[in-house]
Amino acid sequence: MRSNSILCALTFTIRILLISIIGLLLILIFNEFSQVRKCVFISSNSELIIVCQMRFIAYSEKKEYARGLNFSCSLHHFLNSWKIADQYSYDFKPIEDSKVVYVTYSSSNHFSEARNQIRSIRAGSKNKIIFYDLGLENHQVTELRGVCNLEMRTFKFQLFPDFVSQLMGYNFKPIIMAEVFSEFEHYWILDTSVRFFDLQPFIHDFYGNITSGIIETMAMRHPSSHSIFATTNPEMYKYLPMDISLAKSLEMLDANTIFIARSNFTREAVKWNALCALTPDCMTPKGSNVFCSFDGDRYGKHAHCHRYDQSSINIVVSSLLERDGWKRRDRVQDDSMRNFSTIKRGDAYGIPLSIPCQ
Ligand SMILES: *[C@@H]1O[C@H](CO)[C@@H](O)[C@H](O)[C@H]1NC(C)=O
Ligand SMILES: *[C@@H]1O[C@H](CO)[C@@H](O)[C@H](O)[C@H]1NC(C)=O
Ligand SMILES: *[C@@H]1O[C@H](CO)[C@@H](O)[C@H](O)[C@H]1NC(C)=O
Ligand SMILES: *[C@@H]1O[C@H](CO)[C@@H](O)[C@H](O)[C@H]1NC(C)=O
Image 1 (tube, protein in one colour):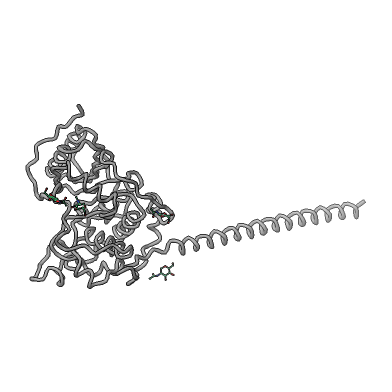
Image 2 (cartoon, protein in one colour; image 1 turned 30 degrees about the vertical axis):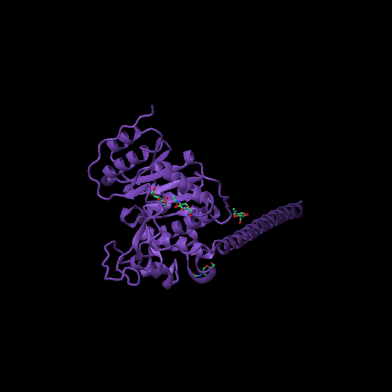
């Protein structure tokens, strides 16, 4: 009887032990599996990193000239959200005048200019205007809401790194350009200094020339009377390299008036420009300033200043044009926007806007 109960207690203990061992084994096996899952995740992650290698290639006469530094992979999700990553493709569609969108932006200190700009657009076109609020006052927003077919948008500074809030670095502009890219087939990106006039009939010829392939799908046509080289901080070439002799010979074109027709070409241009804007060492390298000191030669000599987004978009577009074999533009003949648009800076006087829909 007594030995029986000892046996019973022993069997019980062994059972408990066995169950514990099986339990432990199960936990170990489960852990092992989750380790494996972690490994798989890591390896697919490193594949992602390889896929997102992003180095700008500079071209000269259809040949590769140099490659820039990698842009950070942490920026890739922006490209996806704007649908401008490499897996997206866009076929150019003929331009319909009435569907072209005017995209503009202003902070409160440029509001008078913005009024005059909008009035100049409305004098010749009823097309949609998108107005990005970069820090307007409430009464200014209210005034804009009274303009027919004008849509207000608040620029979401909180989505981007802090340096984007420094408006003098112009990082916001390539970002706006990228944000609207997948939304509109054809659009203008306009500083408040742009004034349109005589839109009809000249604008129709201009669009026609893009549709027929005479003008590229990202068009800037206000020459700035100096080279790209003269007003670009050389540090920018680390990310966006450029054949220096080409940078000295090509006219820098104003980025205040840009026409964009959606195409594979413009997707790439918008992408590189946005990557640069999201990388301070690219768009706003240390020591950059807007004040130039030209010393006679406005093409071959650096004027110790920088043009931020204008430098970047000029480098990017001229390289893509070189890659695709476009004829190099003539320095002085580059002003085919002059018949319908001009630049007016520091326009302090602006009559309040009242352009309701009829
Ligand atoms: C760029 O990224 C790739 C892939 O991550 C890496 O192999 C390469 O060394 C990087 N190059 C530079 C210049 O950082
Ligand atoms: C745009 O790119 C895609 C993908 O590379 C290509 O299939 C398509 O033909 C291109 N479109 C044009 C008009 O070149
Ligand atoms: C359009 O192209 C034609 C032919 O090259 C040219 O004569 C004309 O000036 C161009 N017009 C515009 C507005 O670009
Ligand atoms: C600009 O207008 C003038 C005068 O009408 C015309 O001769 C010239 O061809 C136009 N230029 C462009 C580029 O459209």
